[in-house]
Image (tube, rainbow, N blue to C red; front, top):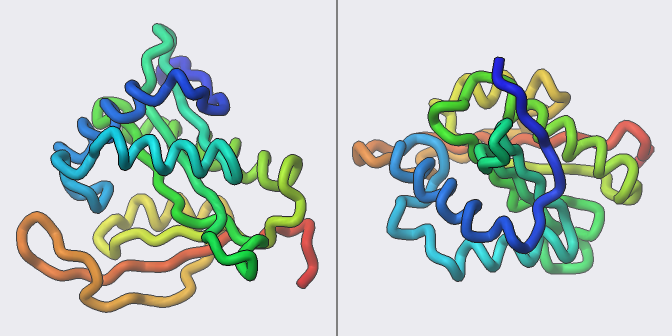
Length: 174
């Protein structure tokens, strides 16, 4: 297992985050966007939203190279102020399966409980073929909330279901 550090993202991480997203998109099967869709505007947009009103954490290796990123923020209508969504997580291909995603999620959920105690739920959507991710999310306390049939078009042209999942803050009774 490689040594790594998870920390809150900083504005100066923007270019490294964009590079990481392009690498992950090139691999296929992880994030929904293709490499050509990873623009500076796209990365700047989610980074600003996450840093202003949500959370963005990154993982760096022992050389301080960025090898993972996770962000989420609330949907815009105030009626959803208790929700963090738009969640995306990426880990560099050579570092997947080493606990980096899990550590970033644990950091996120800890931040939610300590810095945003009014947040009841954290939600995400993953494709049905991503069995390892579903298992990881369930191990962290996320529950499957349904199935969105034929929602995502894979690079191979096949349609598959998206699986919405949510984690509920155990400190809040609703």
